[in-house]
Length: 441
Image 1 (cartoon, helix red, strand yellow):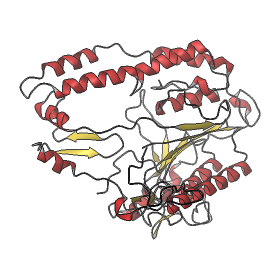
Image 2 (tube, helix red, strand yellow):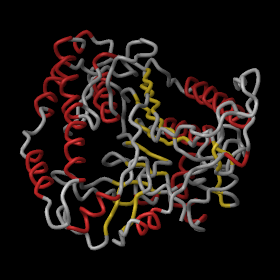
Image 3 (tube, one colour):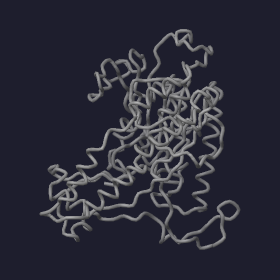
Image 4 (cartoon, one colour):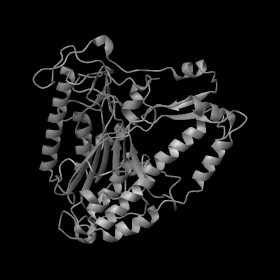
């Protein structure tokens, strides 16, 4: 097998060793269904035995895949995946506890993925030949669904438990021959939760030598009844909402962009955006640079960067770009190419110069006009639509031509036929990744 890559992303709610939520409350009473079928999946390569029908493999359909996506199977749910990883008993976390959602053995829910659980899933996947794995990690800054302030003793205890779990995880993988010499690890933030509460009751605390105490009546999340707030503005349009860090609204009956109902709703709804976050990368082909604050990057840059570091190619066109600034390959460290990519990012990134300029223009246009006159809004959107496409289709072959050929860990060979791999490997797995609503229902 060639080198592996891992992407670990923090989630916003969870429990750590019983210190946080005792049970996932996000499944609306469907605990058994969550435990059996939600949150964990393995997407297999063609002809992989792991996803065969005798293991309850199901067709892994991607109806929008260019050219079709036939002959691939997947495994869906702890009920069918755990027996493959742990055929002699229940699958346990890194501390030896059976993974469960309360009394129901199985996937613990989206609020039940502390480090000891999700890292156990990842380790088991890697040990069973799944080369690319993705996972969510539950936040350490909550207890029973209530936010904790910086330096809170429970928060600090959770962080120590997370540190211990990562130590066990890396030690376990090292025994399997999996480490940063042959594996790329990526850890990135997702939703950027941040603390906006009152100061601690004991000023001067630091959470390390002196923990911080907070007024329990002034901790928690701010929740807004959006439908009520809109009704107060005279907006009665029915809608649904995808409650995430980037809220998506779905208007009933799907009115068009220029429909008066849509325009009225746009004028009434706004939200603050948190756009600065971080990611860390370690592994073969990645230069050790410590903290780097001078590289503009987006989540979409992770995939092409990992592929470039490993010398791999695929047939997809990336939305992001290769972060050549953090790679060790001299072939990719061209300053001319790096500058070209930086300028491309300013054109293509959601908060790049072009995007911010268009947001300002459309926001001003959106707030203009009346229900009977939207001329400015129409003109601005027509001008934006007339902008030429970005240069990503031109950058992709430039990046690909400069990538080193992949070298395989087993033999050091660049030829996959010489690795001694006798059977097709499973494709990739993901767990605890929920792209739907994070709201309570």
